[in-house]
Image (cartoon, rainbow, N blue to C red):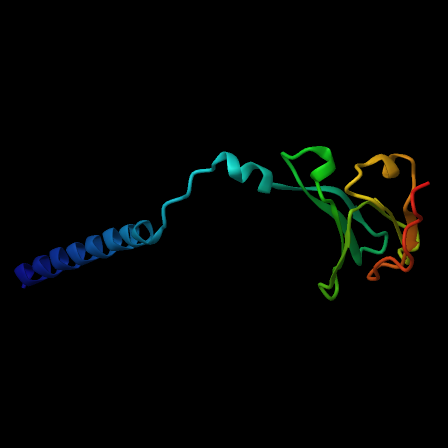
Length: 144
């Protein structure tokens, strides 16, 4: 009887070791090799800036833009996200999203001529309040 128990214990232990070895080997065999980064990948990187949460906690605004490129090519996009519904409104070439104290409005800056550079934004042109969840209601003023 003791022989039978010892043999079962060895067989069970061996089966357990094989199962553990297979469990560790399986994920490693399924992992695809990682592609090394190249110089061509650097301008594809994006960064998050200007994060802002509304006072009522229902909205978040942030800017997603390219990094590792000249300042005139960052292509900023303001995202206004409704945290209750998940609806994401985007405003091209916009930065500086700031919510009003009652969380009913958001003000941001839009570069009216992004190909020209960032001069209009520095001068304060293109600023307009917009209700969260809506895009610009009027065109930004034309540069002087």
